[in-house]
Length: 338
Image 1 (cartoon, one colour):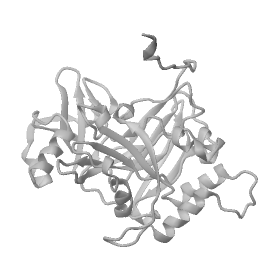
Image 2 (cartoon, rainbow, N blue to C red; image 1 turned 45 degrees about the horizontal axis):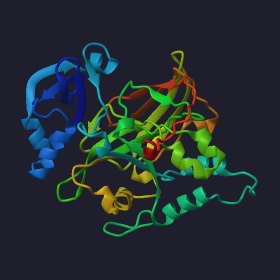
Image 3 (spheres, rainbow, N blue to C red; image 1 turned 60 degrees about the vertical axis):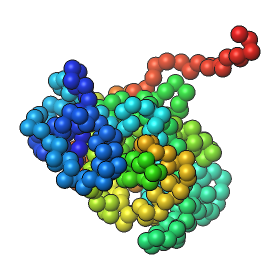
């Protein structure tokens, strides 16, 4: 089952079920996936049965909505509709060997070619202890913070390279989408295609700059996959410039292609009590298999990034927007001066 969040210029927010080539609108009392899954979780409904019971007779053509024509716009596949601070964006890195190799090259300076960087060493820890088996605790992965819901973007939304950035680059991933119940239990409501947009030039300067390099706007969607198979997922990432494809790569994700199990990654995120606050939404990125920066591509203003994974709905597309503003000093005000 695949769901999509929509915004109408006159009717406001709606949720729809994807029934290619159409979208079937869900009862308008549920204006967000957040409200829909809140009802399902807090009242112990069967998810698919409940959602099918909320379908209306209203159908709209998917193609014009996907293309951005008309009055409908596609929103991020999951969000907190009332409070952007109630949505945490985070992720785990060094989960795929290809990304670890990219990081190894980015962080290697004067070391001997056979020396391991801290990044490769952490990846190898995952290979050895990241899949401990059901009910067991494995080695801790790398973890990073990407901000709150105010940074989240959807299909066709520009991903901006801000004035203080050194660069901006795509990272094609799968994101897990989570709702924290009233009793503090985390529920995975589904998955979505993701572009975990980051500043690789900043990170390359020094791996201790990883944290600020991640504070950029990612995109998810266009569809929420309720029951996606996270074992072995094939996909493609490509970059278009002036409507010509300048780079592409076949990619893999899912547990069979990762050093950690999904269970282990989720445990190490939700073991923290502050990550289990009732009513919160978590968008968690599970790592990339390839990205164009690792092959010498520098994205430019107007480039289009495309990410697709088989079985996860239509392609996520986002243009690059390089800010033309100058970086400005922002100073805090001293309250004692007032």
